Length: 80
Image 1: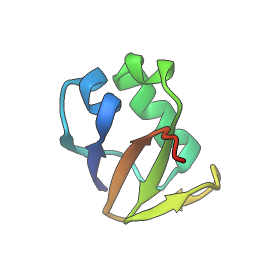
Image 2: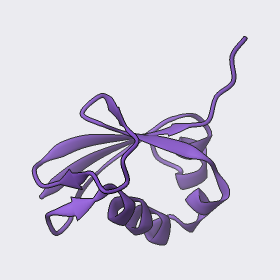
Image 3: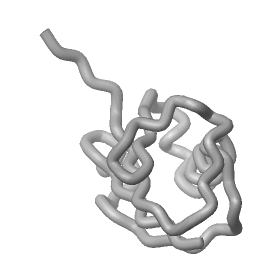
């Protein structure tokens, strides 16, 4: 399956890119995806971030990704 991965803010700086399209085996859980990305880009392990799948925040690490999707890595943010 193909993943269009978008990196935002300090995460884009950490991996030195804003977007990457990659092919991965499917299906893949959200936890597997996070491990895959952190193995590819070890600097991601230093950050706290959320993952959105097709523009929806994905909080369930057991979420199964089994088709082509757009994945966004969103750094932690603070507001007031």
